[in-house]
Length: 196
Image 1: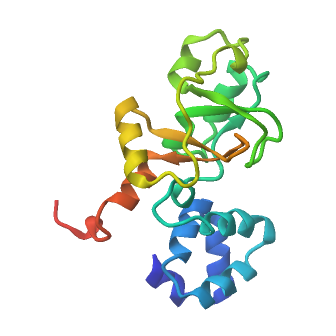
Image 2: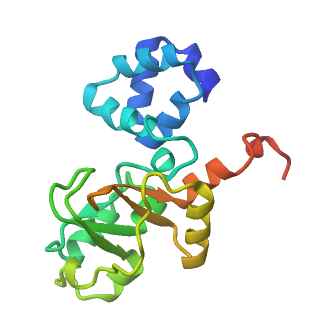
């Protein structure tokens, strides 16, 4: 990916980064020299660059550095039917669509107060008119942006989770760490190149 990106004209490279998920774009930019990172971020649309810049500010190897800043986020008065419609959107990856995070407005990260999450299997078992606030699971302690990868991996394995919420000191949802992001950062860099 780095080799392809550096061969593109800078405006085209910025366009490619804009189309990527912010966490993937941040990971890719982190592989480039600082000067090139800044040039490409400046060429991106400001609203597309902002979440990438935010992710790049976190210390490497922490929840903040590997999380996605665009999880499925809904209010407690949203219905099960609305949540199911949202997770069916074709642009969502399966790991992102596996759960809905529930918080008070605003509905962009950082959100209002984080309340909990609802797994898609729970959504399938509830009446469509039920409100998310009534079925939200808030037993799981969310991660903090500075939680390290070892602790994230331990918690995800302990609770058989594919994603975990990340909240700031004000308990606002700032993102979610997904199992694919944990694996990408835990496996050796060349794991895709190895013979199976």
